[in-house]
Structures are given as structure tokens and as C-alpha cells.
Length: 264
Picture (spheres, rainbow, N blue to C red):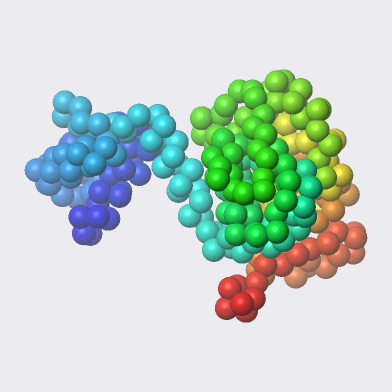
């Protein structure tokens, strides 16, 4: 294990556990305490961790949240990029769209930034990271809903959020999910986000699920959209064939993002 990999493991451990002692990290990584102290001192100089007597902790809650979100973005990263590009192609001038707090929604925004034909598009978002990504995107008006912020995801939920949503007619709602099955539809685990997404669906003319292929067949705590409330699903080419056929049979359009080498 080289220095960079070892220090990455240290940061990941601190993200999950808030703090750790030198001796704990030494045992975890099977290196000397002198090596761990040197690593922690170097990480502290770059602002990634804060040194404590005999150990270290993450350098602030914001850094931990940024790191956690960044780590989530790396899961199925290429597929999310491809899904985002395909989703961005559905956005037309003067549209009012909703993007949630999912990492795939951030990929949609990144693709929209590269779309030269955007004109007076309004993006309503329930995600802090999504809103930050929109900054500097020409031709786009951004509305960030107010409400309670979930520190683990940067999503905004609660009664205030729903009051804001009631002021808008959403033409296209792009929503991520923990899982999708024919029986339960789109599901998620945080109950406040489930409630929020149910409210979004009530205001949306078109519900578009933006999920990578690993989400099919998975069921989380609660459903926020029945299968017949979904108009489109955007996913990658690894969607199970039986699920593709079943969605097509129910009249749900499935858009499959292709690898760059095939689509270019």
C-alpha cells in the first residue's frame, strides 16, 4: 500500500467514524505509529483532517459532507454521466423542471451546462449540491426550495419545501431512487424524502426516473411512485432484459444511455 492509498484509507475511516487514535489506525492499516503520525500531520497540513492529542478527526462537518457526496458520485460514475447526458437532451427552452438531491441529478446539470440551446429554463431543486452545480449555467433560472437540510445527502425536506413546491407547475421531474420494482415502483429509505417525492409527483406533468441498472429489483423502506405514475425511465445498457420488456409492456418509455464509444 503506497502513501496516497494509505492516507485515503485514513480519510475514509474518519468520515465513517468521526475520529480515530494513532494506535487504532496503526492496527487497521498494519503500519507503525510513526508512519500514522506522519500521515496525519501531512493530512492536517492540507486541511483534510484535524489533529487531536493522540489521533485525528475530520476537519469540519462540511468537509465530511463534501467527501461523502463525492464518494457517492464515484459509484457507477460513468453510467451516471451517460444517464445525465441523455436526460439533459429532454430539456427544452422555457421548461420548468425539477432535479432532486441525487448524485445522478448532478450529472444532469453537468450535461445541461454543455447544452448551447438552453433558454429560460427554470430548475427547481431540492438538493444543495445540485443547486451549487447549476451556478454559472447560462440560460437557466435556479430555485432552491427552503426547508430542513439532511446533512448526509444535502437534500432539503419538510413542510416549507412542500409549500414552495405548490407554487410551481413542474413539466418534468427527474428523480433518483434507491430501487425500482414492478410491484413497489420507485422506493427510497428516508421517510422525509419519500414524502417530499410524493409531493413532487403530484405537481409534475411527467415523472422521469434517472437510475442506473443496479437499482432494478431493489426495494427500499417505502414507495414514492407507483409503476403507473412513471412516464419514462433513463438508465444504462445493463438493465435486465425482463425489466425492459415489462416496462415497455406497461407503456413506460425506457431510454438507454450508451457508452461514449458507441454514442459518439
